[in-house]
Length: 351
Image 1 (cartoon, rainbow, N blue to C red):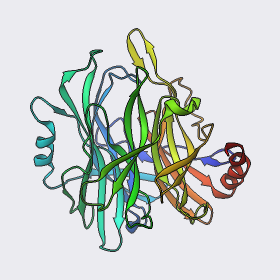
Image 2: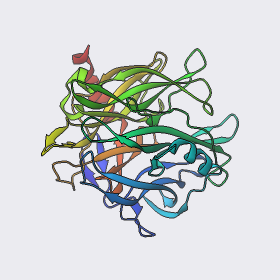
Image 3: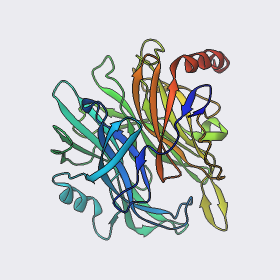
Image 4: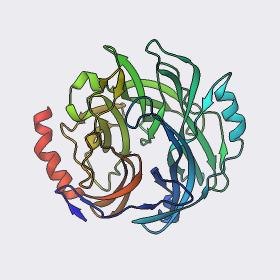
């Protein structure tokens, strides 16, 4: 493992590439199986210039299995009943659905049900003023007893030209009996379109949600590592780090400001930082001034390290899964004690 004060980078790849897929990412695991089964996003085809706004990845969700938390294998495609009907409605006239992306599993323990949320992007027939594709990016949903009995419902949130809905982070219930979940959305400001963290109000986890307020906008904070794009990663359980009443530590995915090169939008480096979330009121109290995880084996100027899932493995210890360069999945062991010490040092300066 590669060593850092706050984490240990595991050697090798968590997910073995099989069945003809060269690029895998965004894993999520079922805790009821001891986190030995789950789902991953696999890239069927890739077109456009990598790392630019014109890149299009066509995706499918596949089941994965592992004997340990450090090694998983792709087994077979995830089958979801009624998906064809839902997808056809989303596409509309002339739309192009490019596949299911970025899954998240949430277990309703009270009813012993599995809810799976995923991104459902549709490229519309039109172009914007700059000649770029117009997308409707929706947060899809399926429910069942397990991965073999999922049925797709209508999307939990519908995106449009001005606002995306993807990359959900599930929050606990607040005192009023609903959840201020977090999603990655989008917002245009000053000539640039930013990825922002937005609240999604969930009164029923299996039905339509409501868009809430933007909780973090990169343009308003000018933090370099997250200057262009922000996306919520997993919220860490309070048994791992307890920040007090209604507060949770979360993993934040960020990207540097965009650049325009030869008329095309180029993305910067994606990396991983921390944030503190008040789930009672749906407010992000703090985002780290610097990212904390940098994959040591990647030196590309526009590297991507993007977290998708966390598993608590012991007292003050857990594994964070992240995909690297949109190609493979890496594991990082987080050290709760050292992260707590880090927070004690940096938080007073933010008040």
